Length: 170
Ligand code: GDP
Image (cartoon, rainbow, N blue to C red):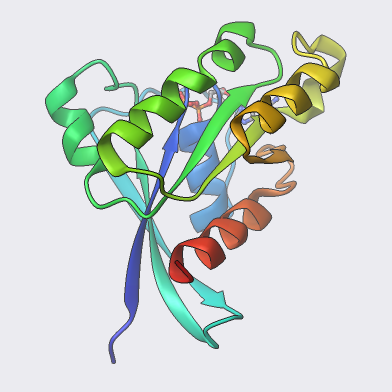
């Protein structure tokens, strides 16, 4: 029978853990290998939505480092209902790029639900972004802020549950 489909974007600089996040969420797998995927791809996951009392099908889209090609970007962003804006604990540039990623999503999709995610919190001893800076960015952008560890599977499901609830109830 009919299942609602929701497209969710995961955006952020290369290396922040986008592919890993999607794989962890959809297949509960993690590898330490850095493998560059070619082209745009997505994985699916059925998610139960409490407020609806039913399942929806999430389609998680991964840009796989093709962000610089505008034609690909358009296809990638088209019809998205929510977005994860991700940066890495150990990559200052990825943190500073968040506002640009937010603007890019808004330019292509309008004001869809988004969440701010700091990934790799297992590497806090190597952090190049302070807790106060991350929280200030969350306040400034008005986004709910999650600290995530894709490697250990910490807070991954929570972010997608939050975004799904917002996306189906707007
Ligand atoms: P993408 O370019 O944003 O898609 O990033 P990837 O998913 O390819 O991840 C880049 C690298 O970071 C890979 O070597 C991953 O194994 C690693 N990685 C992803 N998430 C975590 C995490 O939570 N902790 C640690 N330590 N490494 C991670």
